[in-house]
Length: 317
Image 1 (tube, helix red, strand yellow):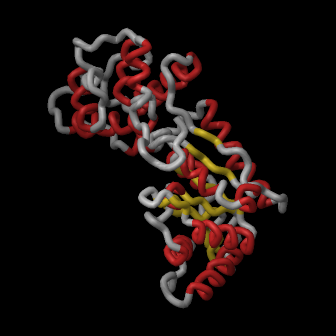
Image 2: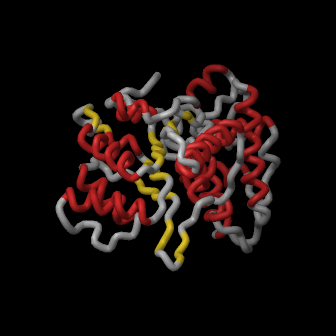
């Protein structure tokens, strides 16, 4: 049996309302720089699995680098924020991303100056920092002020726009400096879909439909039915990333299952158990035949706790 690669899942872009809103803000930031306007930065916030990185990758793919007679043009410079970043580490990560073979050579002042010059030479419009919550030292509960200040200086001196993405508490980095705060528009929060909200429920079903359609080689029940969609909702916590992980695991499992292309509830349950390690007690077998598919308030409340980042700085409850 031939089963599609999990790349077909990773490449799906379901443009639900909040995705479109976030994408429009990213485009506005980019176009503001292109047009020479006073473009403000954008912060994309959300729990793990809400699709922040997926959104950034999609936006990044629209503006690829190109090489011409006058060198490489890189409209967007995109990095994952180093864990426990230092000023030196941040500058070197950006130099490496822009293609500097000597990214770790020279004094900090020399590297910072080189970075600004390279950003200008590459005609960079936007710098993207994913995992921006790393600017917060969770152990010491402190913002890395020196690193944030250096980032502000780099952005100002190079004239690029700034897009950051991370867990909700990374807002404390932006709020730590009044000048930094003024450089940002209001943040965009990607949602954890709530079954009790009709629009969320419809968007969640749309995502399931798109993912199921991408796996034509695997036969499954209609995942947009209330029963199957609710099972997936309970398994994923309404988080797109977890939905994708279940499908990716299912693809791997079915590739090793010879003689059939029909995915049963048992197959889905096994994939969910393998892909998601923190299923809440009592709803840890959402695809079992014994699972109660009635969406009670108690169950939906417990499902919404999936993916909650506990005990971190500034997380809104």
